[in-house]
Image (cartoon, rainbow, N blue to C red):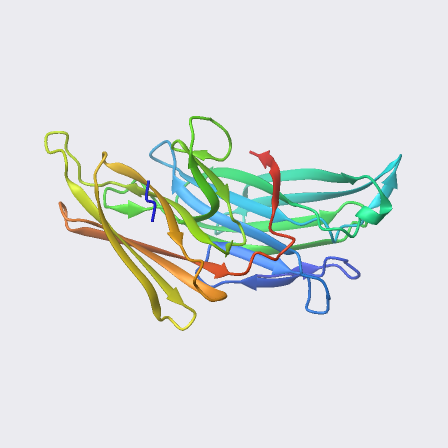
Length: 309
């Protein structure tokens, strides 16, 4: 290990979506229906919260993986193109719209025969700074050639990470995590975190998290905290248990996790993470899920990050 609901569609929509919301999960995915013979493209949306830069706000990140095979391609000059409009709006508990971000994107291919070939999914990121509280995210996706659309609403509870007790951010499952000095849209605290929005894992489970409000004093260096990692299968049976102690670098800390899971059978799993600070007796826990699958899917590769707001 390395530590460093409501679906709406319009008639005739080529991308008929079956919405699958995993209870308690920050990730929403929907796929083409079971009548499709080919491997089904997965449209995934992940909602993650981290501590904001000021004392009044929390950072809400939304990552979206958008396959384009089911969009309508039309001839444009000497190429074929599709285009879509993706928007995410935030509403408070009274139904007032507080913020909205949107992306209009297009894909060009060279020849007609390339239309049915697998294409890398499009990856985009939306970022909001909001006060702690309960919100509804309204996601809408429109094919701009056919004007057919689909979408869903998702309830989001945004925590207050500026409270003084020990706290843990959401756990972000990643395709890879590498140390970097670059400053870009995928960089968090000198780590490049490439999102794995559908959380499909075949070899190593990577995850990123932030710990807030460790009890720390520069007059008492070399103090430690402990982290426990537990993986459970779909029957809630414990598959793996790992406990480690780490020296406190300050009152905040980043966890960059890499757990080999290649030997796990295909299926649904849960990662449970517990942080304990013996200096104040506080403990905090978070959990997330992932899916083990053989690396055969054509739809889980990413293009460049297209959008960041």
